[in-house]
Length: 331
Image (cartoon, rainbow, N blue to C red; front, top):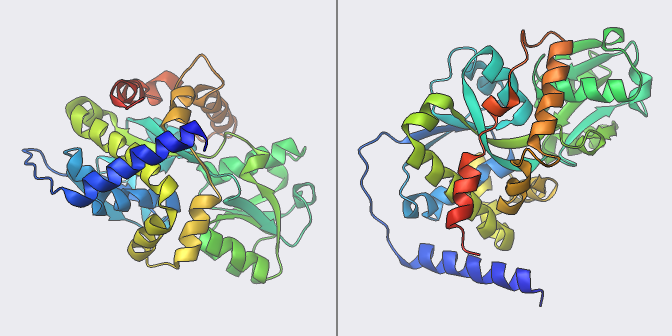
């Protein structure tokens, strides 16, 4: 047996035994840490952490609010009243620059095969002069498609963008209102394929662009350091737990999302999950990391007039918690 795998199994078994046999009780004078998520499968790991007592073990009280895609887009423009959220990195940059001072503190996944562009056409090259559906102008969906167009020699001014939430892409395609569209989630992708549309691009055509992560408002990071750290620690432990017990985790998430278990499981498999060890490299600005991706995203947003100035990427990426976590993780 591979030594690293054996060690991981032992660690997870210990977590399972501790969580399953002990009852943790703690009191806190602070309010619950309020976290917003949408039904992206890796985001659902917060429900696993809650149900298996991992948050409680790490002495952090968490209130989770599940929003649909349309609701989530309204949170930042109206001021973002929660403490943090699980977000796409490109959106963290966009929201930080335009709405709320916030920072990325941990990477969750890179979307891999989960984010796609579907169309009746055969390639991105055929979309010149066509109408393309994206989730939000200025958001990660728009940026994803802009990058694909650029890579294929198409000027963004030579296409028409239309805002369409991902689960409506197929309906708009069928109605002839768009010629192609970005969508994600296994159910949406399967629906597109079943309706006769083709996958003409995936996130792997723009590596490093669509990274999901944990974001907190900067004021929360300053005022509630321990709660933020314990939340991140809990999420990392839950990733290890679910690496071994994927079926159990998928069932917990599916119940909370009110979705089919197989779709949730596929949603966890299709992404390139970023574990603690990956975060050590991603948050190292001396390596090919989030800093490089962030600078690229900022440049793209500026070129397309989505942000009015160029922020310092080091003000948005906060490596402190990953470094702190390294000090407490069992070798």
